[in-house]
Image (cartoon, one colour):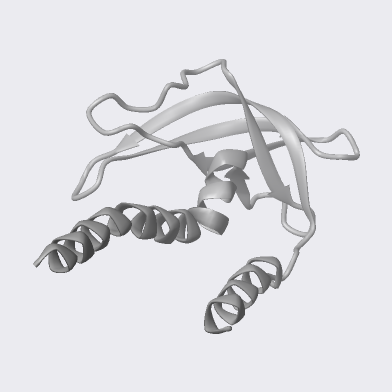
Length: 128
């Protein structure tokens, strides 16, 4: 019963986030800037058209693979989401997915990788 309650609470929390007015569009990368520090980041200036057809520029952080960098270059198209009320706020579709579900994916992977040590410990204690 407690496991059923846990799963119900877990999956309802995923769907209970407030939904804002985000619009999905394709944009063209016009400039990429690399920011160095403790953590190296790459941001891109993206040119895209709003729903009414006006051209807009915005900055978005690119997904970056350590030691390799991002797989995007100037002139590439990228799928973005912009806020309808404030079109300067941008995020990539992949970045939105990671920010929304990344913690749940890490928890799930932690549970999966934790099962094997518990099962082997249980099997060893049963053999004794």
